[in-house]
Length: 211
Image 1 (cartoon, helix red, strand yellow):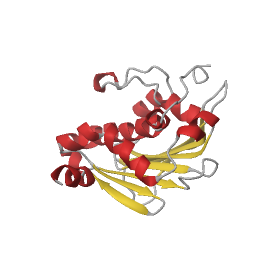
Image 2 (cartoon, rainbow, N blue to C red; image 1 turned 45 degrees about the vertical axis):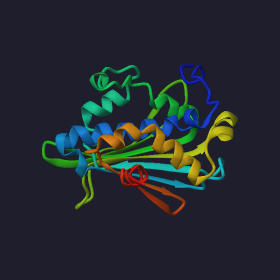
Image 3 (tube, rainbow, N blue to C red; image 1 turned 180 degrees about the vertical axis):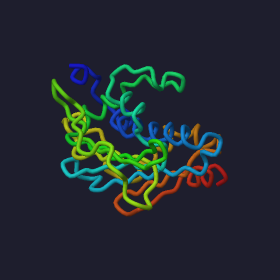
Image 4 (cartoon, rainbow, N blue to C red; image 1 turned 135 degrees about the vertical axis):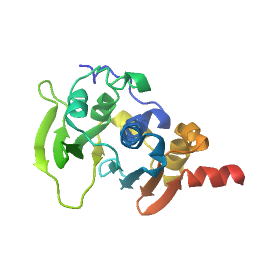
């Protein structure tokens, strides 16, 4: 019911809000891990089949702190206060459920010095929205902490009609949304891969401002 009552998108900015939420979460994860050295953080956004709402896939990956026990518990709780100090309300992920038909989260985190991983599907139903796939398993040797959220296929007509289908439109609205973060400097490097066409932030914005 909470998802059903969410306002439906009527423009590109609103349609991209679920993706923006995932990127913001990645930024928080990098801040939690790296603190003042957040510029060493990396976020990758990979979009395939941008022009086809039925085949659209979006993956947002970071090398942040990962979903350890505390953060996983906060994810599972709606209206959590976990990110309150950073301005988060804990309900942004509800937009994920409203926008996409499939959502999978894979995360690696440290627990008592061991690198573990968990994976789960996030689904829209009236009972258990978080469906565990892997929970506390030893991570692959050589891997590092971080999280990847994979979205697949737009759920509703409202999202299908307003989600950008052109790379230049996606980049324009993405740049506008995070412009303050990019101009302040000191943030993580963000790579946006739109069907093989790669744009790097904040470099792209810095070049635009200089030009």
